[in-house]
Length: 143
Image 1 (cartoon, rainbow, N blue to C red):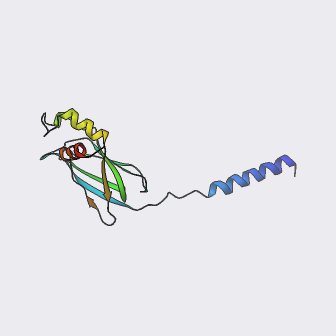
Image 2 (spheres, one colour):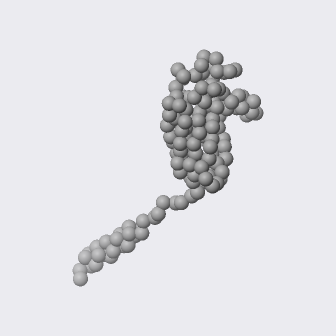
């Protein structure tokens, strides 16, 4: 067999063997999270809820839309410490006087300081979010 053909056969063999062992996706514990996003006693009628694991927790970012009645459901949420964000808040739905904050201040505070939670292991988790309570909590916390 000519040397060039021998080298080609060896390289093809290495590629076939190397490519045949595909890595499986990494498994980590997850759960389903559901809840309702409100502004005081009114449901937030749109936007998205995003949950991302923080350092020390394993998982991936998951995002779900907020339905018209303020509810959301996320599957494959990582277990452990997470950062939760409410994104694309429909500002027209926020009352001009949302407690101590106006609509723009509410949006700015929630984006500047995300909501942190611990997702428990076992079963689905109920996670209600009140944007006014979260904004007030963020205002009281030292930075």
